[in-house]
Length: 382
Image (cartoon, rainbow, N blue to C red; front, side, top):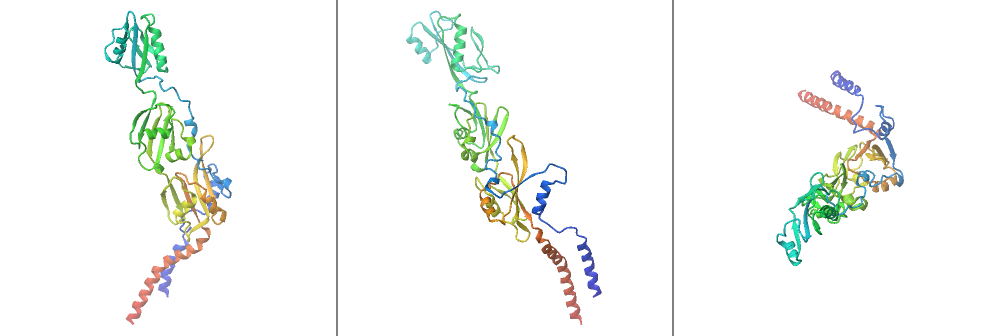
């Protein structure tokens, strides 16, 4: 008997020294208290108790700011800028300033009109300052003009040098009126906007379409030094986001599967990937196996999320649903999960006694087994 006491005594002392029992995380009340009254002195975190439809966040509550992609009036499709290559033909009647036409269709037209000569200049690239050089007329600033504007400017510069000049300017290679498309598209590269009314999804289609699964793709649009990320599925679901592409835009399709994390006393702790374009809270709870029957509290279901305000600043928000209430099951069907959300199942405060019993059982079970084996050996030796 004294031997048994000597075996049990150290175990009881060790058990008494345990300050806390194993836990999968804080309880619901602990989550709310630490959010509203942070012990580290930081600002309180907003806690939203979802009890009615009015408490639900919007499906687009965390979309990137649309101000970056403000709808801009489409510029002329023949606007000239640095890098563009122009074909310039100069027609003259009477005494010609330039040499006679040199073959081709222009030469045929000149032959049909005696006394009219045409000179086609070599392909002329607009330099970085937006200038071109015309023989006899000198340097001409053409950036920001349309093709008709360039014609008029060259014509004015030649009127005192040539008799009845006429100028025809066409675009040989467009740089200004184009966008760059890269990433997960079939044909990445430079794409000329033919109408300047093509939407973002139109540009992706003109580039051969996207590669991969739409729900896993993010379209990054860089415009005038600012960038915004849009989900490809969001462009289809919300036409207001599918704004017109603008010359100079850079569009990059990135493979970026959306995920959310499941933590706490759930049936399964994991990082889950969206298996469709939209996932509701009810579906996320079911996929996680619900609250753990032994340790979880169905009344303490939380969503941790950063929400962007009207001022464009993100702030942390905690949404709470009590799944012990019938109405919460309907609300959870309309609660949209978003990328990088944390779904947390609160730990049940009422399961601590059962945990204590389990802990004692786990501690004493090996000792009882050894004691029973010793007694069996002693009895066999008698």
